[in-house]
Length: 223
Image (cartoon, rainbow, N blue to C red; front, side, top):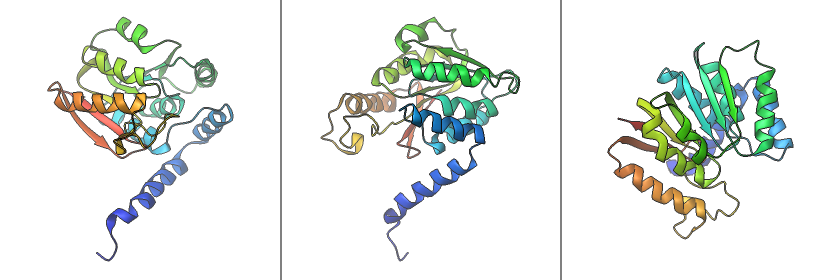
């Protein structure tokens, strides 16, 4: 091989992201722009596409999206879930919940997927949900969301269900100095993700792997 393969990784990442962004629907592109205009960081297109792909792979019917302004993930899931599917969006940002409410209200006649939108903390809301009633939990945004999702995952997920942590490398927080790739980054999110990564790796209840999609997706399947 004439070129070091590692030199091509940034180009490969950009290519994958561009392909996923190009494949988004007009509605998803509009939602992405609205999020940007509201000063909210939308998720990576490849991340939303992958989460929807995982939902199809496990034949998911019920998905929790906790934090991280998960509007685009929800839109992708609305196409991926079956006719009896449900997406639960939990976020403390009122701009996010209001935008999601308006957006999915306009889709009521087009989609049979139910979307439940809750303005709450994961710590207070997840314990109220039914046991073993969910196929996938996706956590992102504030560090507390990751801990809440992990602490509640075994109770909420069906066997074979999946816990997904977005921005698993800790790049997107405002005080990031390289996230998990920089051992000197002691920001709150990087510190929590390092600890959580070790806990998941040592947790026999889950089979866990880390991928380079977006800014890292940690995938943990409940055994």
